[in-house]
Image (cartoon, rainbow, N blue to C red; front, top):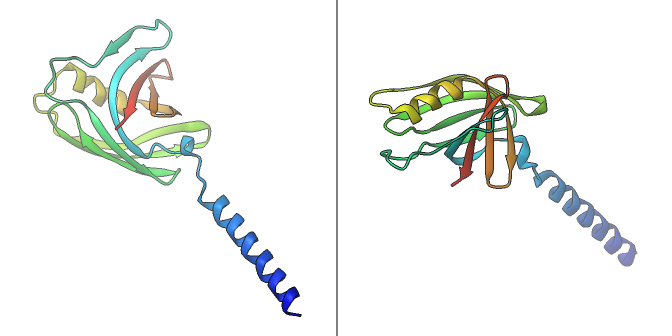
Length: 146
């Protein structure tokens, strides 16, 4: 009887461990969560690339936090603190619901970010890279994990 009890307990523990491992595994491609630095803009059709200028005060860095459906972003542009909210839908589509902060003294690199994040339509993740596509997915911002 003790031997049967031991095997039953062992099987229950193994099944519980497997279930816990499966539920804790999350596909990071389904979320924007992380701290990201904007490194370039790219026009996908013309392949024109605009890399981060070397003469700016600081890089654009955002911290995205979401549950795979809705999230928040906060951080800074070149000269200002910003924050906002976004939604994620199937097919890695995203929509900026709100985004704000001051635009005081924002150079072209930062001003372009404001326009681009408001037009966000979808995203892709590839390891330590995040791409946010905008303007009907014809252009993208490329971010690097921080």
